[in-house]
Length: 115
Image (cartoon, rainbow, N blue to C red):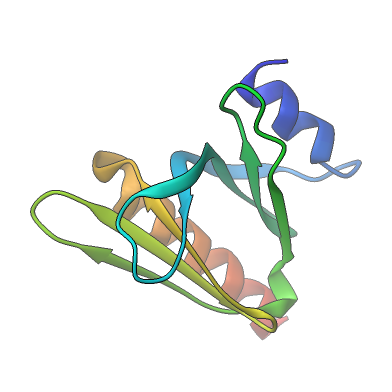
């Protein structure tokens, strides 16, 4: 099963993907990741699916439960943090795509919160 196949399997009927970025789920305080995968923002949720061989990690956050999406970049890495009702998920994301993905995710969260 390919990267997008795993993502497609999680989508709800009528759910549209707004943006994706390659990322690695990381533990707080660590710079390296634990599970490589694909991070996606849809019109309803933020999703993460592990895509490395044998990876079964998935995260599904309903946008109404997301309180903030923040991006932290330095010269070498980009970390996206998704704060939600249950805590914060942190992802090391592809540097060149990080800002665009963060902008789309922040817009999706804002749109849901204002509706």
